[in-house]
Image (cartoon, rainbow, N blue to C red; front, side):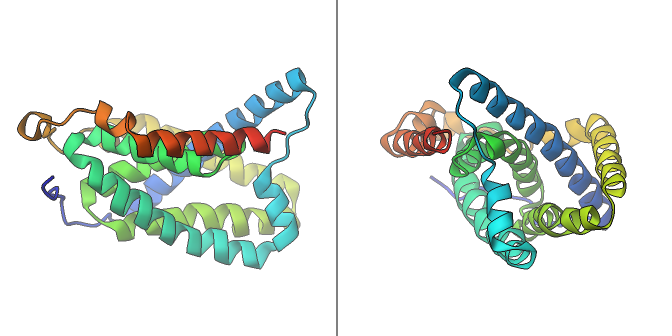
Length: 227
């Protein structure tokens, strides 16, 4: 499979801030959805599900969480899921590559609290990587998003709950308005499908031993987290 040709450019400061707000808004929206799904499951099964991120934050503390989840994790995750997985899937088409890497990233978390918002944000990161060819930009965006959750939000919450509510509401409204305005530009396909040239088909990505085993393992982890 030939190496895909990607653009070599970087996001402007304005573009970075806009995409950050979009990712945060999507993150809050799908985080709420994930919490709702867990609540429904709990109501039917009688099993109380716990948010692993909240548990980890309480155990580890703010600063260790900010270092590990806010800096180290984004560097490793972007290198793997955008720099290796997504880039390797591009010959099958941009849409397939972006969604495959995003779903694989979401499954890695092995819990329904994080799965939905991780996929949503990873789809945006994926399109940014395809359009810019810059792993640096997706790492920066990922760090900004994670540092907001692990450091900024707890600090604001420690000052005043009302202030936190205003901060979150402002992010959601501004991010959603930007998403409505910019989503076509973000998700527009830029890499031509090479399926006809290479004789490749999307099913080879999803229906193979490695992908199936990975999905089953992650789903097993999700089920375990609900027990």
